[in-house]
Image (cartoon, rainbow, N blue to C red; front, side, top):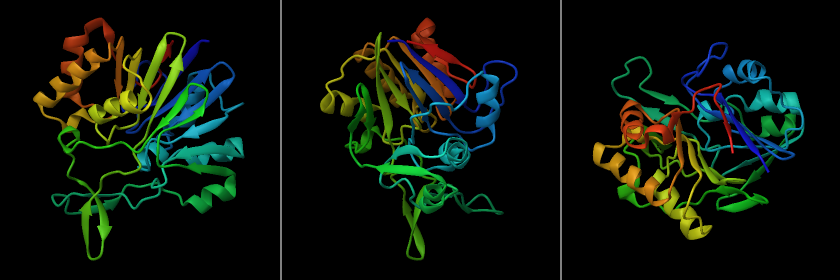
Length: 279
């Protein structure tokens, strides 16, 4: 069974006609199954969907990697186009995610969570399946959540906070989730931002699902918040999993792109908007 993955939203583009936007969204097609993974901030999704000669006809579901606006902003438009559609996400997806930036004198603290309420989206036809653990949603398609987090393997992104009382506390992005999709050429791990830590996610799928080899790792890795020694550990872990293709997007960061490209060479690509991957 062939699998086609089209990158609909990313910070950069792979060809003319597409627009780049800070965020992430993929269209996954496997047999008769057609799902979205994230929806970007909202502006690029409709245009890039059309430019890639795709549409939402027959969409069977939407998966959210977490509740940040740059992954959920297009969700309202999707539901408006499709009508009733299943949306699978973590139970904490509507958390009050904030960014704290004391150096920003205009807006030192701003809300970066989902722009819509659950009720608003349900009124339009969104049917939420909120779960806090790893579960096989359909044959060979796993929603990966509830990651045990080794603190030594987490991104060092101190800007992310949650409001508490009169102040703020660090936001663990409890709602971080990924997808694991079986394809004809092996399992593919699909990341939104990997706020749980890509190393922790890999440990989790090996322990919980028994996956020790991957055809590909695709998506945002949050390596922009890792040091050089941490990126080296990620490279070693990818090799342990015999990853054939490392296709990174969104929040990987320039240093991560450079180091991964140098190491994996022809096994590496930047999965920008407009990129199409066949498995």
